[in-house]
Structures are given as structure tokens and as C-alpha cells.
Amino acid sequence: MIHLLPLLCLVLLLPAAASAGVILSEEVDVSERDPLKQKHVHESLLDSMDVKALSSSARFLALPRPMVTPELAKAMESGRLQPPTKEWKRIIRKAAKVYGLPEALITSVIRTESAFQAHALSPKGAQGAMQIMPRTQEELGLVDPFDPEANVMAGCAYLKRQLDRFGSLELALAAYNAGPANVMKYQGVPPFEETRDYIKRVTAHLDDTTKPE
Image (cartoon, rainbow, N blue to C red; front, side, top):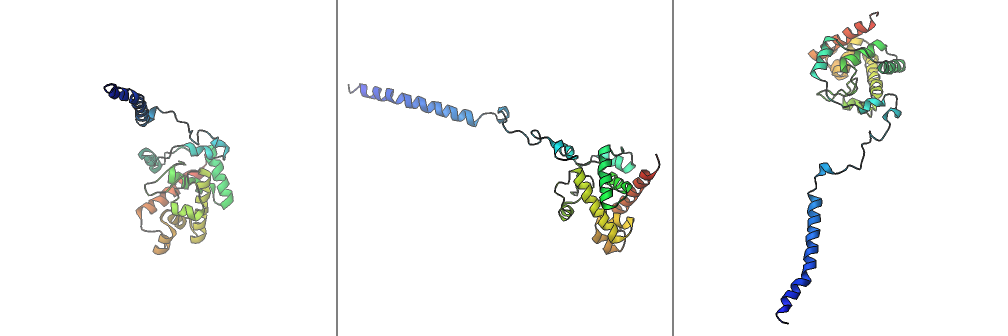
């Protein structure tokens, strides 16, 4: 009996050891499971909602938001751009009515700023169709700069403010591009090549927009 005691103890311990082995195996299986093969149970918010029901312009929100491509920049520079769509025309018409701005001017600014790219993002951080900087967005109360209608309404409010403040289109455009502080500092159009080129391009687009078809 004395010799059988070690064997008996070994037999009694086997279930516990086997059980421990099963638990360890399960733990390893869970921790090392390929996450790419796991089924996703949470849907994307945009996938589970009707974005078109949010607003007449909300469908633009589902678009990707890359920076302006070199090809687009070249097209913007040369003026070889597609005319605004029916939706853009509706937004521009609404903004023009609210702020008393010419539709042609709003169209020209949007064309120069982003070529009607609602998701445009500049290297300096300007966002949306009218390329509004984050600090100006806060000042204007713009929550989503990539909503085309909200962006255009905010941009037109800012442009109207500069027109009222400086009294000329040239200075208003300079202020829109370089900031009103720089216009005041230099008592006119700032000596920035970018700003001067910006005014020329907006004016050129404005001339094209006002030409009879």
C-alpha cells in the first residue's frame, strides 16, 4: 500500500492538470487570434445613417478629404475647371441673397480657393470650399468646415465683412487671403506674391463668370 500511494496521488492530480491545460490552451487561442479575421459588430456611423436626410448638402460629408492634388492645382492655375454643379449654384444663390454679394463673385472665390472641392485641405490648414482657417472658423461659428453649404455661408459672411471694412473688392480679397491685419499694416494690398496672384486669379475668374454664354 505504501508503494501505491505515489501512483494514487498522481492519478488524483491528473484531472486538475488536464483542466489547467485546457484553460491555458483557450487563453492562448484568444490572445493570439488574428484580429483581421474577427467579425466586426459595430457599423460605421455613416454606413448606418441616411446622410442625405441631414441636409441638402450632407451627402458631401461622406466624401474623402484629401489635399488638393497637383493636377487640380494646375487646373486651378490655368482656369480649366468644370462649371459649378446645380447643387453648388443653389448654395451660391442662397449665400448671395443672405449677404448681398454677387453670385459671380462667390463663384469666383470658390473656384480660386478650391475648384468646388468641398473636402479641400491646404498645407496651411485652410479647409473646405472657401478655404477657411480654423481660427476664423471659430470666430464665424463654423462647426463643420467640410459641409459645403455651411462653409460657403461662413466664407461669404467673412468676405462681406472685409468689403464693408475696406470698401473695395481688391482690398477685401487681399484681406480674405492675407488677413485684415496685413491690409491695415501695409495700408493696402500686402507685398505678398501669393496675395497679389490670388487677387488676379479671382478677378480673372470673375471676368470669365460674367461673360455671356
